[in-house]
Image (cartoon, rainbow, N blue to C red; front, side, top):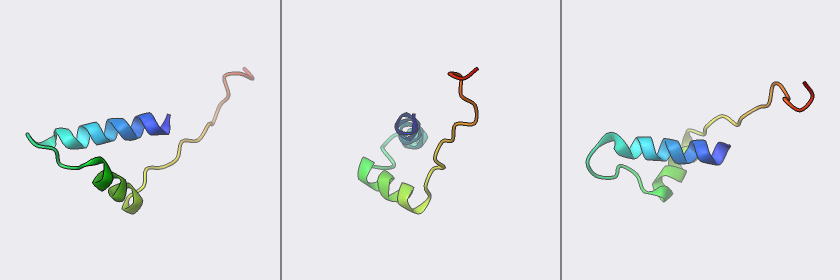
Length: 48
């Protein structure tokens, strides 16, 4: 799930102009400086 969100964020950041704003390597460096929060499971649908 976290990886899919990261790919979508990369896609939307690169849509800001006609040319690519970030390469995947630059984007990973950005995530090291400003990391995304890790997802937490608050409710399990399996135990409901």
